[in-house]
Amino acid sequence: MNERQAIRAFLLMSYLVLVTRGIDAGTTDRWEKTGQILKDQRFRKTIIMEDGDVYDCIDVNHQPAFSHSLLKDHKIQMEPSSFPTGLNIKSSFQHEFVQANLSTIDCPIGMVPIQKNSKLDQITVHNINQVSNNHIQHEEAGIKYLDDLYGVRATINVYEPKVKKDNADLSQTGIQIDNGPEGQIDSIVVCYSVAPHYAGDSFARFHVAWTDGVLNKSCIDHNCPGFVQVSKSVGLGGRVQPVSVYNGPQYVITILIFKDPETKNWWLAYGEQNTLIGYWPSSLFTRIKDKGDFSFWGGHVAGPTASIYSPQIGSGHFASEGYGKAAFMRNIQIVDENNKLVTPNKYKDLVGTSDLLKYSVDGYKINKYGMHMYYGGPGILV
Ligand SMILES: *[C@@H]1O[C@H](CO)[C@@H](O)[C@H](O)[C@H]1NC(C)=O
Ligand SMILES: *[C@@H]1O[C@H](CO)[C@@H](O)[C@H](O)[C@H]1NC(C)=O
Image (cartoon, rainbow, N blue to C red):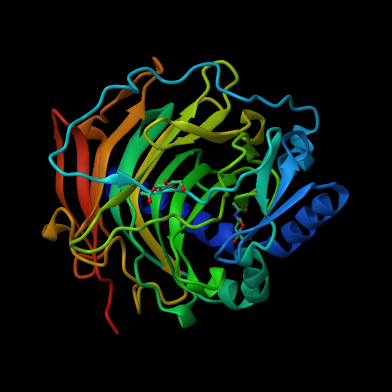
């Protein structure tokens, strides 16, 4: 194994750990903690969505994040001290696509929506032992990138990949940013995920997750304290709609994660207007406090049978089918040390897939329109 391969193998592991731990390990105890917080709150508004999701509007200053021991004296930041420069440079593309909507809840000003009946958690609690006693398998397709990173951005084509319900596997697509030595990696992930066994349905749902590499603890959405939400309308854990149709209309979500140059908090924004969702306070982290050193853009499947009965990634079609048929990511960018959005350096990436028979990456290019790729595939059709 040369050094690059070694790094790659280790990063794969870190991603796996994040995905599996974020969803499985320790959720019982987090669920109880969050339940406690909610009981102590006086929420004025409960909103039940058409799809059965339930959100409570909670005072922005009393949201779950602030029960984190490191955030007791945290002063909420309602907007970043600055955005990265270069945000408004539009890169053209010959095809039409439209931003999909994240789940929108209409909370009053000064409040934020927190999912109440997070099915993910309840069902996961039920399955912890089953999942963690099994050998977790994983596959992936996308771009890995090794460089100093102060932010990452991409426009992600949204599909609902097929995942068998009884297998406890999941398929997710998104962006990850990491830093830290093996075994102590701090990580942030923003993705859409199809996880029928956990979520109870096969919809694409929007999630944020992070790992404290030192405490070796992961967390999804608001299921344990950490992420500070400022948006009064975006429902984490909610559906992304509409999703793209094979050979039909294409929908995307644009995701931007960036470090506030003054407070060092990691901000999350989405859409063409870079609408703020919230941030991870820098005090949560040790390794990723100042910058990231690794990023992944692409699709990933994980679970007890994710290699034997691999679920789909993206549209479920190989990358070679191209626009409208294969899933794409476009305008892949990083934020550099000067707080500027730039196209990644093509000598610092590793592009590929864990199994060419199941998934592929194609049309990978850096040209005057930026960095882009098609990725995904059928997995194993059983
Ligand atoms: C997103 O939601 C808005 C408001 O409900 C709606 O007008 C718009 O059509 C939706 N976008 C798409 C792509 O469906
Ligand atoms: C992190 O936690 C996981 C699951 O609890 C465990 O398997 C792993 O060994 C831990 N890693 C470290 C470095 O402590």
